[in-house]
Image (cartoon, rainbow, N blue to C red; front, side, top):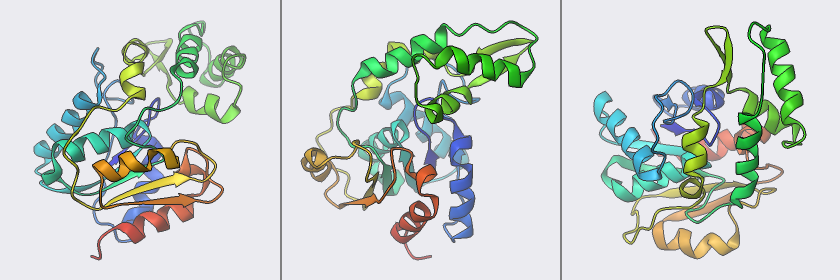
Length: 248
């Protein structure tokens, strides 16, 4: 079961899902988090709520045990689920995120404000609308790759361009999303923390907390990868994940 990160959608992990199935992983499920992709919007955006969403989906599909892989925010949702319901999680893969608090919130707040202030006239062709939105985001979101990623959320609904992510709920819960809930009982199963060597999100300062909550965890870095490990070093990422999966 693959869980995407903040401002992402299940489409970010389609190539990963296909490669894992080709590699013999068995069935793979990708899903949109609440307030993302085509999932319903809700004013609540905590890891407990997102973990429950996944639990309800697993129950509805009759899945009694799964291997969870989550990137960034999805990794924190996956960890929350494993710690709440270890019986449902056979093993856990957290991609470039630790069970600790993450980056300064101000950076994400400024992205949200920039997205909210994008103005696009109705009836523009999609390519022109994207270009206009890109120009308006550029002063705040300097990184072109990040702008392209945010722009995957620009959709046309009945002739108007809107953001399909629930920006109000996300901005309201940014502190929750950047933090991690408190847990006392560790997850007993195998866990892999798969980081990018060029990313600061899994640092040696996090090792004691990883060890406390995930005593069977391995930490592995993929050389030359940034935060979006599966995009930066796709083949190496797939190999690392397949190597961690149980033999068929």
